[in-house]
Amino acid sequence: MGSSNIRIQGAIAITQALKANTVLTSLFLEYNLIEDRGAIAIANALKVNPVLTTLYLSNTYIGPDGAIVIAEALKVNSNTLTTLDLHHNKIGDEGAAAIGEALKVNTVLTELCLGENNIGVDGAISIAEALKFNTALKTLSLDVSMIGPRGAIALAEALQHNTVLTTLSLHSSTIGDEGTTALSMALKNNSALTTLDLHSNVIGFHGAAAISEALKVNPVLTTLYLSNTNIENRGAAAIAQALKVNTALTTLDLDSTLIGDGGAAAIADALKVNAALTELHLDSDNTKYALYYSVISSILSRKQRPSKTTDCERESSRRKSRPEGG
Image (cartoon, rainbow, N blue to C red; front, side):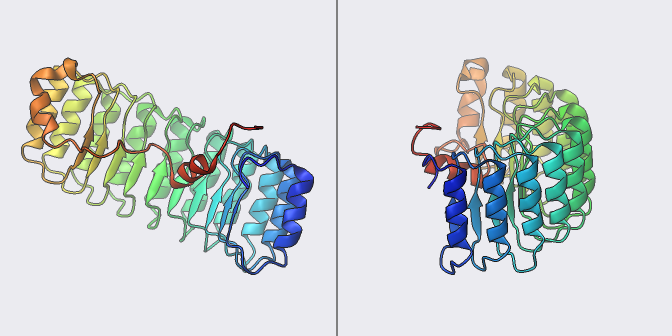
């Protein structure tokens, strides 16, 4: 039902049916004008529906009030929802705080997408506090936000306690070198996170150096996105040093990171001894490091470039059949 011109009354009608339904397990309502009133009706249905596991509400104009009632539904013991996509709404810090409180007691939700929701530092801190207690959530997206270094530091502290989160997406979230360093410190002790997306943040040499130190000791991270950052040659050289000893990382995206011959040479040298990395993505314009391209290309994957979105964003994009409002 994604992008079906469903408005508030339509959403209310659907939720009335949900209250009695015992068959439907997935509901896709993205790109519809649901708003807070529709979200309230959906939340009331969630409290009594015994089978729904997947709910997509991205781009549905839900604000803080809608997020608060959905959060209350997540606290209900009988709730069966495992995937919730609220990407690209307007829930803000207030809505994020309510969802954070729900995560402290919810034991079934495994995937949560909150990207592009005007979430700032306070919202990130609320979610981070919840992660210290939550024992179910495996995928979290807070991308395209304004959580900044302080928000990243709070999430890093949570990763020191959390043992279940496997995927964290913070791309385009203004975390900078300071936030990147905090997350890197957490990676030294975390044994659960396998995918970390930090692309499109202002990360320079200091952030790259911190990531390098984490990669030298972290045994579980397999996928790392650092594209569209400012790590340059020095940062690439630092990461290359880690690749010489790292045995876990299989996918590394360094596209659009201002790497030239110096950084490419360091990476090429590291790949001679690294046995784990199978997908490495650099700028498509290899003239900047043409001398080393033949060595690097020997391990470049010929598969499709990795997606820089979370699972729920990919599914939402796949189901979108026409432009919003079309």
